[in-house]
Length: 87
Length: 212
Ligand SMILES: [Zn+2]
Image (cartoon, rainbow over all chains, first blue to last red; front, top):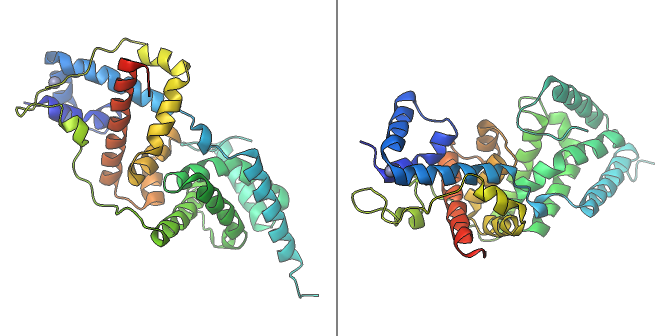
């Protein structure tokens, strides 16, 4: 019989649909009989949902970074078309 | 321009083919479009391993390298995956130069904090408090929770942070994440689960106290 500890270990595989049918059935059955894990999985699903919607503000490229890359690329592309020293 | 996400539609593939042709031809406009399309996921890849300034440098260096390397791109992966792989390699090289925390094989599915909550018989010793149906939704809208999550994601161990960022936040496919981070599929799953546990525990604390 699946214990709460194993149930918790497999929570991501369960909510992401990564388990074999028999494992999945064991997880479902555990949820039927275990109040604590029902509570846990409800919070777990909400946590995963929120993470998937999280936009990490500081991980988005800033306008200044994009401009910097544009400028560097423009210079690089110009060098390729007219290599310095090639006349 | 469509933002690159997990599953490529035929339209995205067409845009990608057009872009690649433009990049090969050294077309400045194609580079500008590509920079706007892919820099977000590239920066996220770099930020999994590096601080903000170093991550920006790696993204910029990668774009410059693409000018020469695009001719070697064979289309075996998507352009996005290819770009992220270059970013990840460059980020890893930087880490090796500084002192990198060793990336050990992880086999234990539970974080120590979570493992401690179980009694020796495998049942909950400290179970989680009951969760309302839309509770986290309401907290999320207050932005304080988002700020707190940002802060805690920043503090995750490097491999957990990389995997969580690419899998949950950027929603790349499992194959892409394994290739970009050079991790086995099972290590990716364990790292993801452990990262989620840390954030689950953080959110539990936030629910109790309202503070980060
Ligand atoms: Zn249980």
